Amino acid sequence: MESFCLKSARPQLELGTRPFYEIRMPEGDLWSQHFETESGYLVRYPHLADFEIASDGRSVTCLPVPGMTEESPNHIYLNQVLPLAQSVQGKLVLHASAVEIGDRAVAFAGWSGWGKSTLAADFSVNGFRFLTDDGLVLEPCAGRYRVLPSHPSIRLWKDSEEALVPAGAATALPLGEGSKVRFLAGNGIEFCDAPRELHRVYFLGDAIATGISIRRMGAAEALIACTMHSIVLNIEKKPLLASYFDEMARMADQPIFYHLDYPRRYESLASVRQAIVGHATEPDTAHELE
Amino acid sequence: MNWSDKISVPGEVMSRLVGEETVILDLVSGTYYGLDPVGARIWDLLVDGRTLGEVCACMLEEFEVSREEIERDVLALISNLREKKLIAVS
Image 1 (spheres, chains in turn green, blue):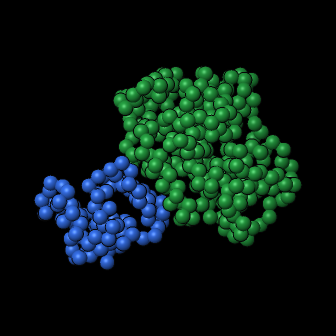
Image 2 (cartoon, each protein chain N blue to C red):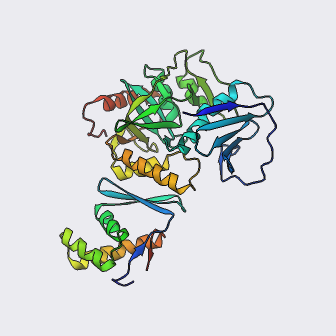
Image 3 (cartoon, each protein chain N blue to C red):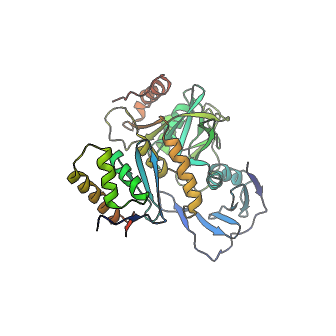
């Protein structure tokens, strides 16, 4: 469990130290800075808020800048800061979206812009509820893993919005996360608010396939892919990283990892969705689709 | 390099066996390497503290290969790992 405390607004103070990590938007604007502090970590979202994360990751304090709406700190906390705090606790967190197929979770991992959110949105408006559009948090459970739901919203580029989002969908207030718009669940965008057992992870390819291609990944390939797509607050904490690597190696040994590639065309999304549903619901999915 | 040499793994390098393969993570460069089952077995013996000669002897017992082949494979792997700073030879 994590505790979250929202404090009174204050201007962002000069910290006097250099961040050990920075994240920039595709357009180049600074999105966040990660600092180490005496009590843990401070994650700064310039002109929005500072978040203090305890060294064990179990408590987070938000210090918003003056003028922030009440909704925004909570939104950044659930979507951005909580996955970081959970990584400090040793939970596995991946850059991946996830949807519910049957009563289990199917995840799509990949680099920014490779289609994670588009797939989550396409599934969610076609009867398959989404669990997260990024920052997939995994929890070990009876020898397997389960996906925890995150903030009930999906960030989409304009073209995906036009192709997928139902008329009347509600949007969240812009937070300076770049040109994407965040759509809230409801009005046809269906969200699953309960944990689901992880059944499949599809790592998205770079769209060189001319058709839909699904290939089973070996354990070593899966471990490398999981490591590359992990969200870890501080990779300099070696004991924590070693235990994280151990947990990922255990997970990578499970036969649930596939490489998925397909042409990125909105008119093909229905057939991609059908292929994934078919693949994920067959009793034996050791076969490959080409 | 001598057959009595052993290797050491820097503190910033971690490895894990998954299935029959080994994944090596280098925290300094942030890069990952995969070793196939044969490479994984050589790595396992090396990090267990065996000399290069002992590694070759073990591999000869476990795999149907000639001494010449296994010595060439072990030296090639060590040279590769050393070049990437994943091991030091002493």
